[in-house]
Length: 110
Image (cartoon, rainbow, N blue to C red):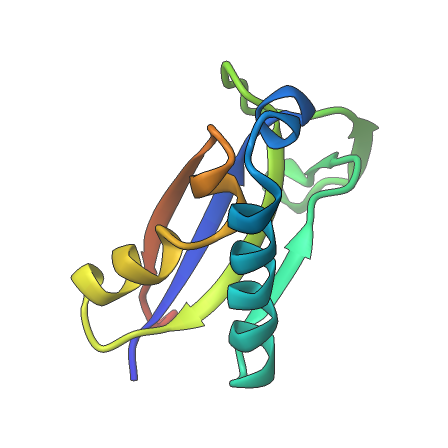
């Protein structure tokens, strides 16, 4: 079955203004995803890694990407179609708590 990576963006303010029953349902949805083989997680502090031309690795703290909302979490899910993956992502905490979720189809590496 195809895999998709989701990236959730959201902030504490949006989370806090979301009805508790909606959040409970979204967290139960994430628990179901994990129980059925999906991987979900809350984003920690990022590190940028470079090894240009294989000449040496450098790592520095901080995000490379920028967004109006901070990266809040991620998931790797399975779905038959992109539409199904969107439906699954639409029930996650970031999607319901005034954030946004990107859905990225994962392709097999050569």
